[in-house]
Length: 146
Length: 125
Image 1 (cartoon, rainbow over the protein chains, first blue to last red):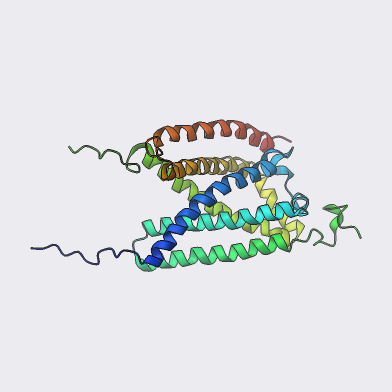
Image 2 (cartoon, rainbow over the protein chains, first blue to last red; image 1 turned 180 degrees about the vertical axis):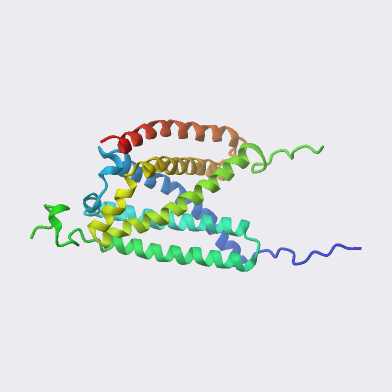
């Protein structure tokens, strides 16, 4: 009696394999860049300010984003971290979901969330307005005075 | 009793548990990232909205939780370098155990510097 294997694993298509390879490389490259970006982010926001996390408020962010350096820095960090995280979650979903429709639904949700947040975050960084509030005196006494 | 297969990187012991920890910390960081993008987006709503949500980060509970967050980031980051070395360095898989202890040492040193700093900020003036 022969053993019948239902639906043996199909090898990936050439295109699919290429995509997986690029995703695999991306995780390593983005991961290494993210170590530097995030350690810098933690140092500048949490460790170095005299009052640590208590220093962070609207004026703190406005001060940082008045410089293109921090806008670009935070923008790159946003894109790399979110894609890195989403692809990592995709790996877990592929490993642990047992039903095909659950796997597909979760993966689609992951990318929908990622695209939405990348767009949101990029817009927030690029259109940031330090003088958004007419009552600016309390926040940025110097920048927003006419 | 069959012996454990030799030379496996991800089955049993440090190789496996560091892999498990890498996944758990990764998931934790991912969900924090979602929250963090949303809370930062409030700067586009109003200074009051942003400041009020930042106030939550300054409470003792979140201040202490942030120690865990930074711990997760440090482990995931430095263990990530270990993973890259296992993949690309010719002797990476041979020294994966030793590299784990290096990761742990870096982790302990950085946490020893970070924890008092964060506790001072959270509970001090």
